[in-house]
Image (cartoon, rainbow, N blue to C red):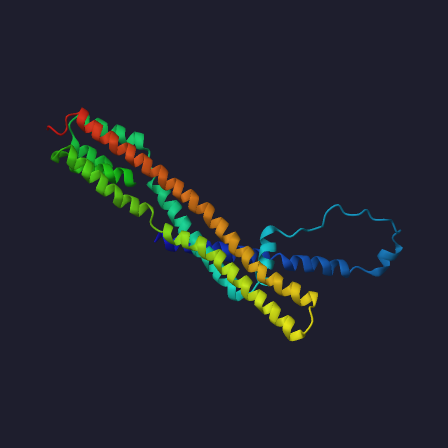
Length: 272
């Protein structure tokens, strides 16, 4: 469900950004028509004064508009798969980030509540605290407490086995993100090679090395590589963030597991 919501969110942002950039064009044309409709007499009667050179253009194109223009100039046969890779990669990354943020829990407060219940000899109360807390750390502690009556070896075995299961759930979807990181530049390079072949075919067909033919073909060919590398860089940053988040949760989970065994030994829970 989270993957579907993330995919719809990314698709909605793309559509909204495209519509917003397209809506700015009629304003510019209306302004130009208004200036062109002014009577010529007013301009002739006004004294001619030298106009200062403008320091910057009246309206600069935004970064998104430049990317959109370059994307349209590229070949749709190779640009569209790169765009699909970006949308799917962003959806998977957003879903993982949301899941990992939900899985992050204040381990110190959780251990304090568990310790308070164990000091009172209430193992079931400690299990209830873990059951009502979200995240893999609470789930691992719950499995350890559930096997507390079987001794410390059973607790450690349950923590290790269930911890590996939680690690697999945390790393879910990372394989596809890494695939997109590797696939996007490959699609870009493949489009570049095909574009260069088409450029040389045009030169062979014309029989002359025209700068227009060569420059146009090479420009379209290189745009696929640019966008492929851009998608890979964006996904690489998100991938590294997700991996660091998983490492942080794993470290907290291991520390909480060791602390749970110490609390069980300190409160003589195994002997009860």
